Every structure is written in C-alpha cells, then in structure tokens.
Image (tube, rainbow, N blue to C red):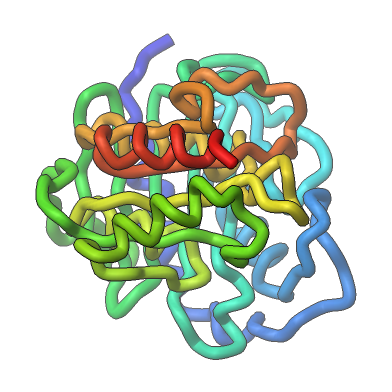
Length: 281
C-alpha cells in the first residue's frame, strides 16, 4: 500500500474550516457518555461527523474508528483511521483550547502504534494548526479557510522547557510525586485540560508531560488507539520519547478499541526518569 498521505492534510484542512466556523453552535453539554465513559458535549458527536464525512470517502481509507463510536466502521479498502474528534471538549464551556487527534494505521483496528504510517494533531487555538508526522518527517501546517497557508518542520527542543501532569497528586505513587517536584524546579508548569494543547507546547518548548496511572484510573487516562499512539508517534518522530511505564507507548498491546494506558511524553531523559519514578512507591 502506498504511504503517500497528502490526502490526510487535505482532509484535515477541509474539515477544520467547518469546525472553526460552527463549533460555537455545539458547545452545550448533553446527558450522554461516549463508549469510554466520558461525559459528552454536543460538539463531540458533531465534530466526529464532520471528520467522518471528510475521511470516509477517501479511497485510501478502509476503516474509521472514533472515540465517540463503540465499533469500527468499515468504509472501504485501505488504512485504518482513528480519531479523537474533539480533545478537551469540556474546555468549550470556558472557551478554552480544543483540538483533534488522528491516527492512520496500516493494519486492522485496534492496532499497535508501530502500525502507524501517519498521525495528526490539530489545534484550534488563536489560529488553526495541524502537526502531521509521516515516516521520519514532522511538519506543523498553518490552516486558514480550508487551505494550508504555511508549513514548518518540527523537532523536539533541548533545554528546560515545560512539564505537566494529569490527575491529583494524591493519586500518584510517592516516587512520581517526588520526581515531579524535582522537575518542577527547572521547568514551567503547563496543563490546559486539552492534551493537544499541552503536546503542542511540548513540541514547541521541550520538557515532559505525564498522564499516569491513578488510584481512580489505574489503567491510565489516555486511550491508546485515539490519543496515546498518535501523539507518541508524533513526539518520537520529532526526536522525543514516549513510555507507558514499561517501554515505548508504540509497543503497548492493543487489547481493546477503547483501551487506556499510562502515557509519558517528552525528552528521552525526562521520559525515562518519570517512567522509573512511576514504578516506584
């Protein structure tokens, strides 16, 4: 199968034009949960529909799986595409940043991260960007009015950078709490409530992000297929590292479509340090 994924950037550009124009119309909460058990806002399903329409009809796409859908949709013969349609959707109520995460797998879903051939991280910030990794190349595209208007290569910076974590400190291991205290002395804290925004900060400034196993979520916070694999693919191809506590996130077994895993992202040294600490008590 060809690994030309220009169609992915084109589809993202088309879909984001509609999302930016109408997202405000779908900001209310609804009395429902997605298959992963998260409370939905109306925009979750709506953005899912926008991207489904943009991606499902492409010849290169054979399957479509969404965080908002219980099962994989068979849409043809080609790559398996996964999507978190609106990461950070709870931020809509305060008009804070949101985004979209896309994975393109050359395998049946659910799949290993090593089966990814491309991944995209879309950020609806002051302007729209799509950071796309394909092979060894990571590029941040600026999108306006449905078209790419500028593009720049992305690589993980060295230096102190930022750090952030999900969940209450009291739910983490003692070792991880101590490691976060040590790192916090030399890094600026960043946590927005939207993983896409924090990873964009990471790719811009360097550092480390920790989405650990918690007492209330021992399996972790992020979903392997829709979030952890795609962002780990982008971060690793930008020169960073990832870990689920025992190795690269990309090697985590896809035991279920909506499986969650602990996820650490950042510079290789800091990722190793946090992974070791998370395993401590």
